[in-house]
Length: 84
Image 1: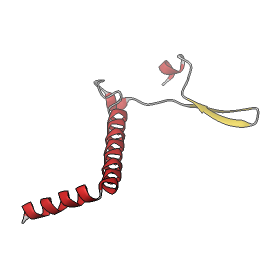
Image 2: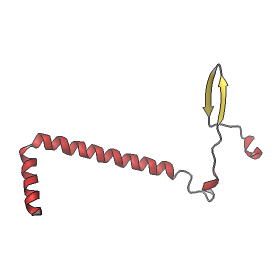
Image 3: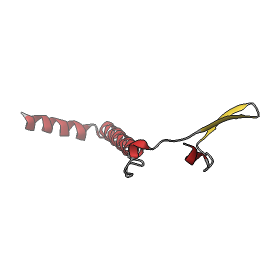
Image 4: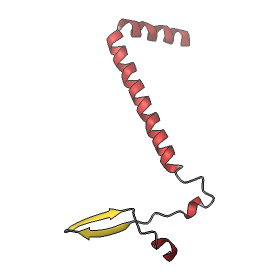
């Protein structure tokens, strides 16, 4: 039964070459996109995990207003470290 399904599938692929090529191209682009997203998320979640106390790492942001516009930066004076 499976052999018959495969035979019919190949006949349809061969008969409708352009439609099949578009489907295969779309499927390969979709799989490649998902793979890239998974790799990106995995990299972001593993950032700074090689430290012994990785669960104790925090990010300090500075928020302020300049010329009427709010802004936030991740740059803080080195003297702020001992204060914490």
